[in-house]
Image (cartoon, rainbow, N blue to C red):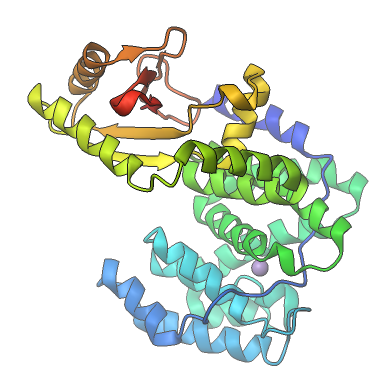
Length: 353
Ligand code: MN
């Protein structure tokens, strides 16, 4: 654990030069999640959830933000509701959802911590306070910030991971709506800090998908030209073949089943940013770019995982130098898996984890 913190601290120290400030001109996409929809969603995965708490938070936040608008002209209230919606996708508990709904009330409205505590209890008050403290760091001047930043992020992480989850969802919503900000310098600054601070934080706590989306949204802002080239190449490689990922999943499932291994397999196309980074790191030219899909094979035990690897290597050619054993050597965030790259079904080069 101590080594893990040391590594986290070392990385954070590197991120600190970047500015931390919040965008004030974002717009939500699509229709705002209604009060009953939000409550139903939480009830759907947690029947025990405190309905009153969620309803009260919704009404309180709506009233507190009142007629406040994003610079885009949308009601400010749509933002915390979208953030809460993102966290229901992760099936988080009622206190976290209430915190998301309330996360900007202390900083941006007349609401007080005492009010929050009285109405929503000590836990929610503490969580909202945590998120507010992280946001305040964003307002500090450059010099004060370096040390402050680092300490508070780490405190937040060790104190209650839910604070960090709300902050990351807040950032994701702001990134998804980044293009509504008119000032290009501001957009770039937000994208840079997302790349340098928030994406690595998401990775630290094992949220790979969130990390990938944050990075790719930042990439779209920082290097639109590069991202377009990757997308262009991806379209070429796909050649309109939309079922490819599904066909490969089906074949891999079949191959493993024939060897007596039941596995759940998930396939995806890699994000433009992860492809770009790999190309840069390995000095690969566009023409050589072929490794664009990744597959996850979930099995129920550790020996089965090694057995599945054996079956896959037995059925397809593996690419030398690409095998990694994160079971015997887990990643700092605790991730354990086997990684390999093969010339797989339909002679496609794919990564299998
Ligand atoms: Mn916010």
